[in-house]
Amino acid sequence: MVNESRKILSDDSLRITATAVRIPVFESHMVNIVVETEEPFEVEEIFNIFKNSEGIVLQDDVKNNIYPMPITATGKDEVFVGRIRRDHSVENGINFMCVSDNTRKGAALNAIQILEYVIEHK
Image (cartoon, rainbow, N blue to C red):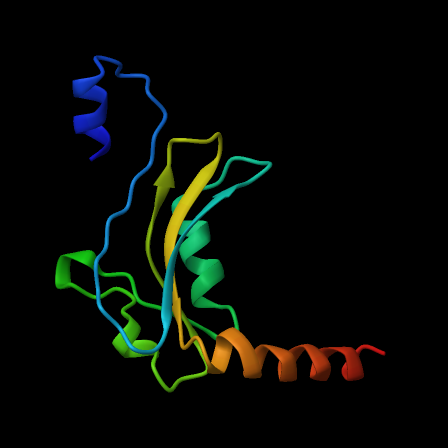
């Protein structure tokens, strides 16, 4: 999609990012996230951060069709992250998919975890 947009508009320097996913689901939500860091980074650093973060499950093996899916997150407390790639639409950009159960992690569990954090760090 990025390369086709550049070709159609005859602009190889066009800064664009695109992700297209269509999945009908009853539970869970999936978002595509773009983050712009203050400092340059290596993509491998981002993989390691996600891999070693509590509550995050890294699922990123596109060659073997392993990436976050709503069906994987349903009924679970973890946040599933994958499809990690450099995002050239912003300086120092990273783009990734994030999936979680919208009832558990998107609402009730977040409230509990925030309260636990406040109590622990009072």
